[in-house]
Image 1 (cartoon, rainbow, N blue to C red):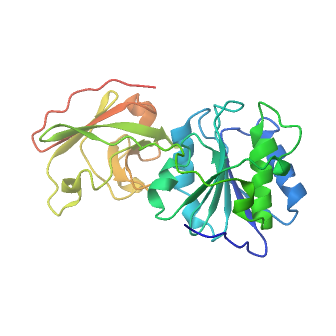
Image 2 (cartoon, rainbow, N blue to C red; image 1 turned 120 degrees about the vertical axis):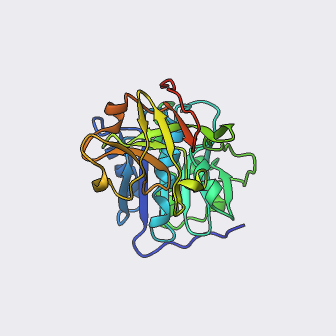
Length: 284
């Protein structure tokens, strides 16, 4: 298993939460961290994770953590089970530390990392006391992340565990020989519909001679693939491989979500060649 990561001269702590920015929560986390390690460089990854949505938090983390320097501490607080028996954990890969509730929010990171050590945080003397039943982000996760950033060995926080919670992101499923059914994983702020299809799921769309295809989502059909957003004609919905590595349904300077009447959870049907895609229902 990976050993303890030694901290850089100015430690980095990232924050990913569903707290939003209208309350004091994010600022309070930063205050706790800075009180313990005043020279910390705190970076906000995202505080607009959909409330209580563990998969959305997992996506936000998975798309960002690898771009940070080695030894960064990533604090993730998407915690609908706060105050319950779910465990607080530290996960250590070869390059990074993660502090989070043990509810699966680190699952997509687990899938990418070959060597991991996961520990149940039980050393309460690192917590802010008294510990609130409703704000473990402040009282447990933030101080533990700060002490890790300060250089405290991960072994001091608790014993290693192997039964940590993890899940697989939803994968497209075959309907028949020429069609597959997927789902909209999220809608970004531009209204792009990020599906769970990857180029590996539909390699025919990326060969020299692309066969006819149809993607049906909400009330619209998509029959063209573009290489960048600007290639799309005004009012056209098109497919594109986005920076997250998934096939998106997008519109040039418009909201594909509004145009298609589709949201997070909406089903997406992909039919290749002479497949007969039909309208699919929306989900939440």
